[in-house]
Image (tube, rainbow, N blue to C red; front, side, top):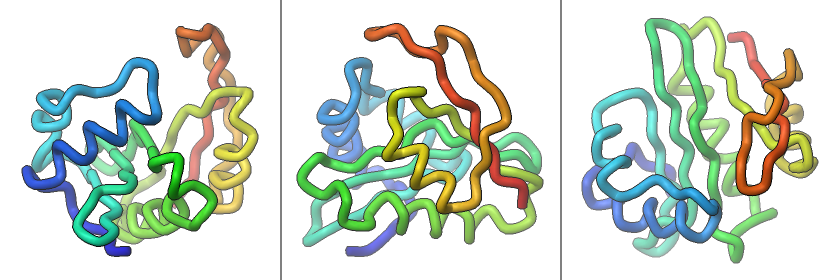
Length: 140
């Protein structure tokens, strides 16, 4: 598996990951708008996108929008590898932050392992189904 900066050639694969992972996925066009902005990385296995991480940036702040891995490749270290590369590329940032569903214990455990700490709760942040989000931040 390789981790690559998101390029036009990755968009269809990342959009497919979005559809497989989320009820309200980003469209390919929405992803295209992020090209050249922030830090968006694709995990590629044998020429196919199997996961990605997106991070919008404002000055020295990083806001992780999504960490997504195709179901068949979960629990294989893909998300951890994506996050490690994101953290490496975010050198010099003040922090990285993200929201995670309160019920998503596996993701929260991974984020904690990667140095993120819970810093608050966003009430009713998620819809379909409605759920609070735990705000997690890693100070760099």
